Image 1 (cartoon, rainbow, N blue to C red):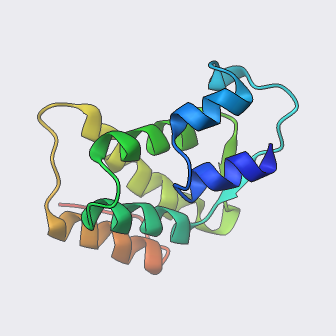
Image 2 (tube, rainbow, N blue to C red; image 1 turned 45 degrees about the vertical axis):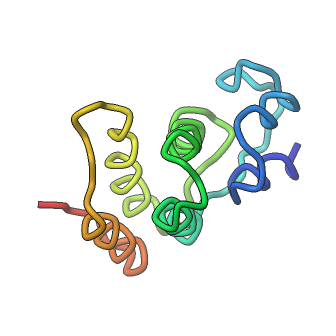
Length: 120
């Protein structure tokens, strides 16, 4: 299970492969030790999206699984920074929400400096 969680975190597999291993209900997986997400993992995701290596749908799947399931936990020393960026990324499934390249660069900068992200 740990290999699958790590592979999903690194975008090596998608949500379909994650569900093949863990089942369709990712919110109620039993006996799962959470994989830790670090700021560098979120930066990696944003950079892959900006370089068009992954589509928006894959990024949203990643954000929703990391944010809303118990399969992952944030590194405690970076928790506030990660949570602030994830809260912005989670809004991307709303039709009127779109971020500029500069917004993504601010997200990356806040993760690199372990600061809460503010896009205003």
